[in-house]
Length: 468
Ligand SMILES: Nc1ncnc2c1ncn2[C@@H]1O[C@H](COP(=O)(O)OP(=O)(O)O)[C@@H](O)[C@H]1O
Ligand SMILES: [Mg+2]
Image 1 (spheres, rainbow, N blue to C red):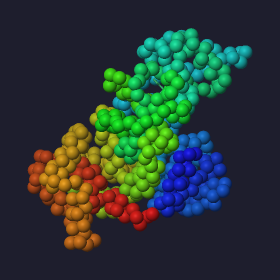
Image 2: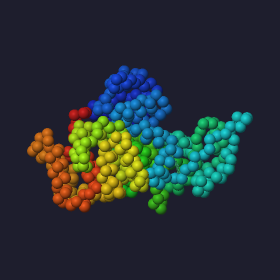
Image 3: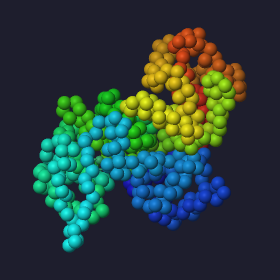
Image 4: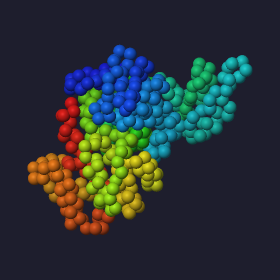
């Protein structure tokens, strides 16, 4: 609730309309493609995918109604932060663990314990053969026992021996027969970090330390919080973890040991902001608002209204540019995340293919290019090479140089400037890099351009003021 109030406060400061809707009293109507939403004390008002962002907190999962509404909104093309799928993955620790594993992210070995068996007298049975689960974790006692759902450190405990494990499990199951429990290796960590990822950047990081010897260092348990400068490797781990869970705004818990190992413990899809704002002294919420009100950052899986025409890749690419003008969906974020993720190449391909099959044109353009190169990696290498060369040659920061160029083209070619701009760009690349260098790499240029002047997503950022 504190984060919601902070969001409201920051929106008021910037003159952005903002309403807090409580999941349980939500009122919603999809009337012939018009979306009306409100709650007990907020008279339903109309929203469109072009003028509204939904900031979804984990509490929507407590209400089937609210999660159904968010699912409908996502299908209608609304930008929801975080997405329903992200909230769901992060809500359950075991699911989050499996996802991190799948994506090749180091995380403490975790085993799910069997559900309770109730005896005739109503008491839970002792777990049989506990040793088999301990063996699966493959680590010495003490081990960490946690409830599958839980936050703020509540539900996380340390067990010293097989006997204490069995008795604690039985007690917990007696209190709540529906409880799901996890057994996890204990990481002898030196530092417990909370890293905030927004889009694909780390915007803040803090270290958390318990003051009373508790092995849990959560801020909610009164842990001390201090700002922490994290290196590129840790940043990348946080970004990869966010991307593994499809998170746009998430808090990644990272444990670091003194010998330089690091593990993502979990990803929080509804990160608190009090601790991190206190630790860093930064206005995290206003950064978040800036990000989500910038339409160039909007992502939605269901932007699939058009089909590409043209025979050759270049024709299709041209068509892509034409079709996407005026649309504000950040295709590149998702593709970029897939390309940069730690999963193997064939899984990357599969993910891109799934996006393509869902009608995602950007993914299909990338695939078409990746096919000729076999490895998508090459595409990003090329992107970096181009980026570096450009900076070197122009001896200026990329952004300002391109901004200048964009204005020049606009002045010279009026409404048609984008076509000219791209055509010339391709010509220049062809001359400079030769056919071999360029082969199979157009996709990366598409990607890069999504962050450069001339591309609709970039333009949207410049037009931002209009929408405020
Ligand atoms: N496997 C582990 N090894 C060492 N410390 C752990 C482990 N799991 C949890 N902790 C400690 O407990 C805290 C809370 O655990 P976490 O899994 O993040 O649950 P919550 O969702 O309640 O924050 C962590 O920040 C960390 O300090
Ligand atoms: Mg945590």
